[in-house]
Image 1: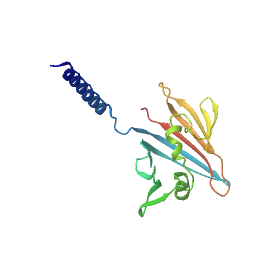
Image 2: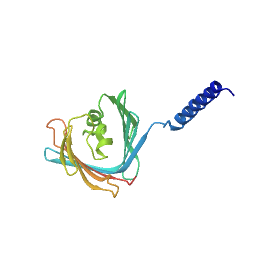
Image 3: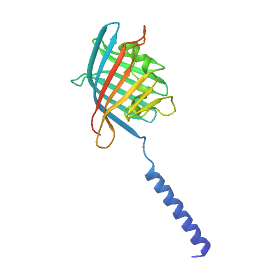
Image 4: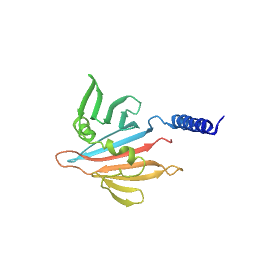
Length: 187
């Protein structure tokens, strides 16, 4: 075999190896799933209300899906955020009801009666503010963002947040004061 031909064979072999390795290294879309329990306490104008249940937060590429379920596991609401805005589907006695809009927080305010900061959850559950958005970090696992105060109350041995408290004061005429507590399942 001539030196020129040998060089072409080696170049072809290297290019094939790079292509195969690149194909093997191609990772399908990353999906993160967080699940656990939640409780919510609402207070406005001397009235109080609340509830509890389970949640599953799925983050896949640019889509965030939050499922809220009763303590027994029946899903009563699903909030999805994607490139085309937000969608909330709620089950009630008359079947599923779907509402669409630009913001999940406004949709949950309209349908549930209180805003739910779904867009920030995937970062907040990780114990950090959403990157690229204004935040006031107070230290010791406490930060404020978008009018919400996030407190990491307990961590797993790995350092990941286990229990969080997310609060927002009452917005007169718009929304009650909200205290949301999350207890995450171990990952």
